[in-house]
Length: 609
Image 1 (cartoon, rainbow, N blue to C red):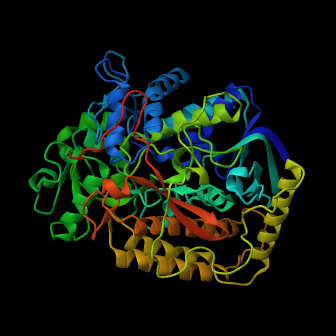
Image 2 (cartoon, rainbow, N blue to C red; image 1 turned 90 degrees about the vertical axis):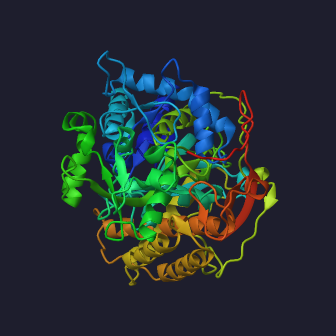
Image 3 (cartoon, helix red, strand yellow; image 1 turned 135 degrees about the vertical axis):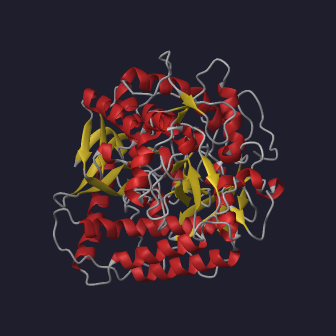
C-alpha cells in the first residue's frame, strides 16, 4: 500500500496543475497515471488559452461570452470564478517559462477564436497544449512530486453507505502496467480525478486511444452523479481519414471554409452572417454537415479549409504544425491546396458533478478537467476555454483537497441538489444486464478504518482481474467496436429519437457481450489486452450515459440537436440532466441551472453569431 495526503489520478493539464497546487499548500502529493505525463492528451491541444489580459478586455466580457456560448446552461458561479482567475493562471504559466507566441513589442500574442467578443486566446504556435504540459511537468519535477508512471487506476476505494452523500473516498486501486502488481493508494486528505475525456466512445474522434472515460465511469459507479452527458462537442475541423484535429487557430488567423461549389457557405447560406467561420463550434459543425447532406460537400464527406491566402511567412510562424498534420495524414500541402475537414467528436461538456472547488458529493473525492462538469461549458464549449479550465479548476481542486478554505460552494452536489424527477422511455433497460455485484464499487461500507476500506477494494480488484485473465471468452475489441460504431452513427451532430433508441439497444447488446469477454494474453507484463478490456467497460458506461441524456432532453440547445425539437426550450429545459448509478440502474433526475453570478444575473437570450 502506498500512502500520501493527496492522490491525483491522471497527469495531463488538470492533474499536473492540481498536484502543484496541493504541493504549494504543503501536502504530500503524488500523481498516479497510466501514461507518462507529457504523453497525456492535453499535449494535442493546438489552439490556445483564453484570458482577459488586455486593458480593453475584462473578465466580465469573458464570462458573458462563455455563458452565451454555453447556450445559458452554464452555472454562473463556475463561469465567473473561471473568468476572474484565468488571467493570473496565464501569467503564472509565463513566469514558469511557458514559451508563448509574442508580438514585436514582446507582449504575449492573442488571436481571435470562435464565439469571443475580443481576441483573448493566448497561444504557443499551434502546439499550445504540448508546451503547457512540458512547462508544468518541469514544475512537478522541480518540486520533487512523486509520479507513479504507468499505473492504471481502475477503482475508487469508497465506503458503500446507502446515501452517496455519506460516502467517503479513502484512495484508489491501481494496476502497474509493467509488472501486473495491483496495489492500493491511500489518500489521507483527498483523491483528485483528472483522467480526461471519453472520446473512445466514438470511432471518429480527435481524442487519444487512452481517453476511455476512466474517471467518469469509476466515480459514477461509486455514487457520483454524471451531469449533462448528452452535450458532446464535435469539432468542425478534423481530418477525414483519422480524426486528427486541425486547430481553430487556422480560422482564428483568417482561414476560410468552402463547399464543393467554392462558396464561403458560412456567409452564403446564412449560418453565421456576422462571425462566419468564427461562429461557435456547434454552429460551424452543423453548417458543414448540412452542406454535405444537401449535396454541396466534397466527395459527399467533407468541406475545404483554406489558409493559403495567409501567406507562407505567417503560416510558418503561427501554424507550422498544421502543415505537417495535413501533409502526413492527408497528403495535402496547406501552402498550395486547401485542407479537407469534417466534424469529429472532440470534447465532453458534461462529466462528474462537482462544485466550484472541484469536490464531488463523496467526501474526499474530487474531479477536474474534462472528466468533471462544474458546469462551466453548459451545452457548448468555446474554443480556447478548455486549457484555462484545466488550470483554474485543477488549482482549486488541489488547494481544497490539501486543506485550503475556499469558502462555502454555491453549486450544490449530490442527491440533495435534485429538484425534479426524470423519466424517459427507453427500448431496453439501461445499466447492468444481470444481478451480479458491480465490479467497481468497493465493499467498504461501515468498516472501521480507511485502510480496511482500501484493502477491501484491492481484494475485489484482484479478483476481477484474475477472472478476466482466466476466463476463455470473446475479445473486448468486438464489444468496443460495436459501441463506437453505433455512437458515431446514431449519437452524432444530428440526432433523432429512433437513432438514439437504436444506440441504446446496441449498447445493451454490447453489455451482454461484455459479460463473456476474456483476456487472451496471460502475461503480467505490459498486458495491453487486459488494460483495453477494463477500459471497454468504462466506454460502455460513458456511451450509455450520453445516449440516455440525449434521448431524455427534448429540445435543441448548444451541441445537442434533435430533429423533433428544433427550438431551445427555456421554460422546460433550463436545467441540468443528472444520472446516478443506483445499484446498477441509472436514475435520471434534474437540477436547476444557476444564472445568478457574482455581480450580475445572466438572462437567457437568443444565441446568434
